[in-house]
Image (cartoon, rainbow, N blue to C red; front, side, top):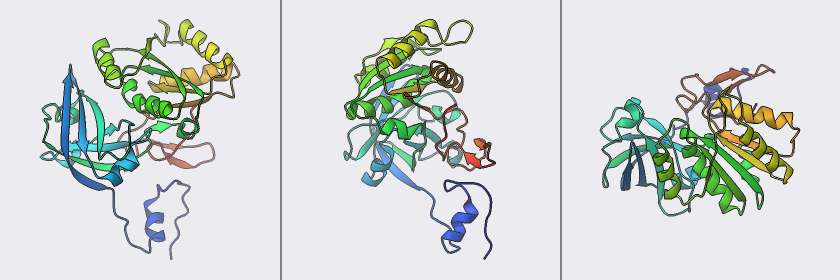
Length: 287
């Protein structure tokens, strides 16, 4: 029998999966026909709740959980990955928020109660540092978000609160309409404070640095960053600079995510030890 000796890991190599399964292809993730239960439209954004099987609900209602969504009458290439909001389990439904920003999301603009959506999943690598986030219990956690990074970070905040953690949420509106961000925060009853994360030189702003220093000095345990790769790097670098090794870091996995399931190869990276990884499938260290 041939053996695949590539350095891929984490279930990425299709050939090795085939060999381990006795030469038979494993079934791909299922696509479910799901009824839209409720829809809330607001200024270029929609929040909708969809009835789903309990088996799918259990898998995706966790930080970093997401699914691919499209209308029933749309072609398969209109599949769009959407984060699933973390909330109470075993209710037979999931909630998602979509911002209309391209042809794949515009298809959902006229969504109405009673419509049918095709949902494919589960997928679960929408956040990095997931092991640190899930380890928090009765701790102090700081959440920094900017623009659209707030939407997938809502699940992280709600998950931390469900485990009796004390959370501080700071929101930089970025290029977003303040009313859109307020709608999302009010929808999930999340108190927050405004904060400009970067200064005019695109460095961490002085208030942000002071906030991080105070959080570290007061015994904070985790910082979650829902923003661009650049902002995540700035926060990670500053934490290293001030020597806060006890503070863990988690972040949105949006730097290289493309197709979301390891097919297109856009998120492929070769590590220092020559391993080939896919960011949409593997947890990697935040740098």
